[in-house]
Length: 183
View 1: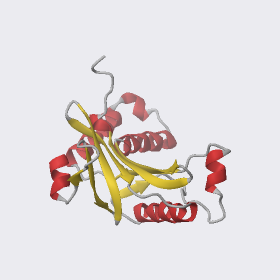
View 2: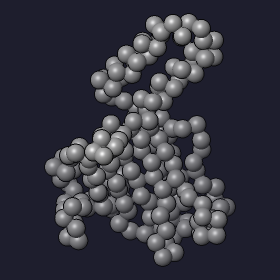
View 3: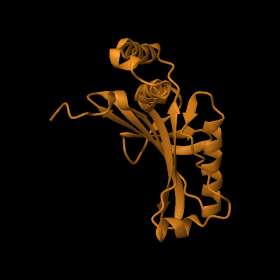
């Protein structure tokens, strides 16, 4: 993964050789690659530069719009945008509010899609499925789809740094996440 990122123009940071620096989506960022058993389970992206409250709300809302308008992602049925009038400094400091947004990567991996479809087919031939109502069947199918989507999540949040703000973004691959197998 690091090799692929370097091919895209990222370079090792002079501060930390495990971290990369470069431009992502028009912003200077640090990139951290997190692994489990030599498989990437998270790519963390951190803005290099901090912004004031107005700038970070614009950036956060712009990111929400970019993900919502990209057919490679599916959003949770929530509007994450921050209203213009919201005082995020007050909300974060006094009310401990956290500003984050999450989206699912639509699978392009045919193996993941086939595996999910196999799971759905096993449910369809199960005798208990026949006893379910139409709503129950729809809920079961929706749960299978959400299980598939939840394996590849992208989420970002606002991080406060001494009264200024930056975006932290995470691309998670739950297929490679530790599940206690080393315990």
